[in-house]
Length: 357
Image 1 (spheres, rainbow, N blue to C red):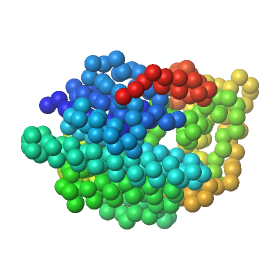
Image 2 (cartoon, rainbow, N blue to C red):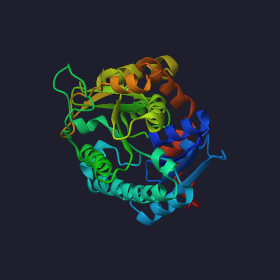
Image 3 (tube, rainbow, N blue to C red):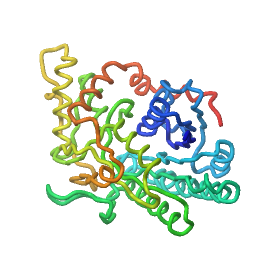
């Protein structure tokens, strides 16, 4: 059955991967709702933007009338809520935007969805029964793991460390409360660190790639021993769609890539791939650019996801290993200089002109 997906934050990194996956590999319709902050880039959905099944709305999820209008006009069957402020360093410097978008925005969207769903209950009970609100979150809500053993499961207690993770934890609680109190059919997923094409250059992997190509220092926090579980973004997009269409109402699913690496290992592997695929003009090695800098406040030491539940219940497993996914990522950045150059110089924001609801 063909469904209409309303995807918030669909011009962002993970959201755009979901939009591309839905249009390119399913028969579903997509309504992309994005405010187009600095991290929203319509060029990331350019490969599917001309498809008849795709629509774009420039709107803020905190704008209740705009959200109500989007539901009324497009009558979605599934909401995939990815719109969020997500950069930890930015949350430390300016937490207000994270509280506004991640908490207030999620509340506004939940209320718009609840009003729409209640209307469906009266007008079309079958569609109401199949409606889903899928909230996409992060493993950072769990805090960090002590020592090299143990994994985050769906029942791990929340212990967020940064304004970003605290705001996401709060939004997770709101979604579960709307399901418990009002019966809204919700799903929650918590994912590990994503990487891949179209990643905004402030994040670790694209930052290191572009700094290396420019011959700039590669700044690594502390001793570089922080461990993260890395998930290729296209694998994540497939998982999200499987949860949205096949997950059990009220359930949480952790999504991880089974790829635990220290930050230093990631940077060194990137240097070696670049050394192979784009050797520096001067005689030298990209590893020589690695520079250790003061650690950031409240930096969690280790994250690792137990993705057994989604594998057992929905049959999802990642297709990419860390090695294959990272090679694809480096190759993409080498082949798509126009995309990231327009991000670096700010000209990508010109795409926003003339775009309205």
